[in-house]
Length: 342
Image 1: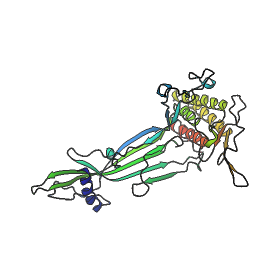
Image 2: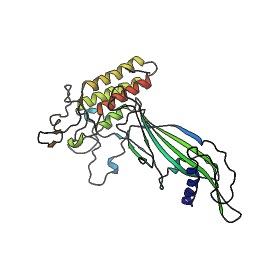
Image 3: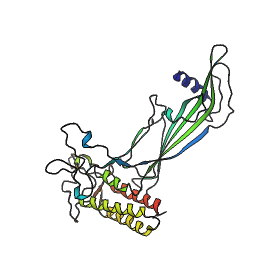
């Protein structure tokens, strides 16, 4: 019955695009025709999502005989040991924005607001992703808007967010008709469109001072290709960045009385990242014969835990770890303190 309604109402709505004015009689008598008008528009505000979330993998959920590696291993091979006394190995991972399109792919669960006794029939779907310009890393994060529709690009329903800058928005727009069916006197079924609606669902990637350390920990499990090395290559630097992020969180929690201290803490962490960052296109090389050498740039970059860091943070096109952190700090500062455009 739902497919029949969809097919029938589609004829009516398509005929009335782009204003979606209606009502249309599909079969049988018209009931309560609706005056030609723009659709009723409802925005569901802003739904905040994080770039990273806590990891849920624990030893309790592992099969028998599998070692828990969510913490650093010691000689006995047991227990969650904190490296450098700071944090377990795997605490936070990248988050995702997952949009459920439903079994028929029409995002029907987002078609809300129809009057009682009517059925929502989705007619149009659009997903708009908007990224703001990052003044600190405009080549990695330029101002850009991407629009997806079922007929052109398809609607991606799974977005990984670890490298997505905060303030990025995903707006899901769902156009649908509210359909009423009644049996006609002649035995036919009257299908009447009693209204047209357009719902906006707004999802925004968000960062807080308290979740900044989570981003560091998630990036620390991000491998550089097949190198099996994280983009934050030095454990001593990793510990320092976690400490600096903790200071930012502490000062932010003390607002409004610590603006200067917070500003200094953010600037200090940004300066640390810039000073210890190695920007490169990729971690592999191609020799004169055209042979690809995976991880040719990194074999001597060990994980040291002494003040003389070796190396620091590696930023590639695939894994823009430095730009991601710098951009997050920029938006965090703008949110907590105010405009800080260079």
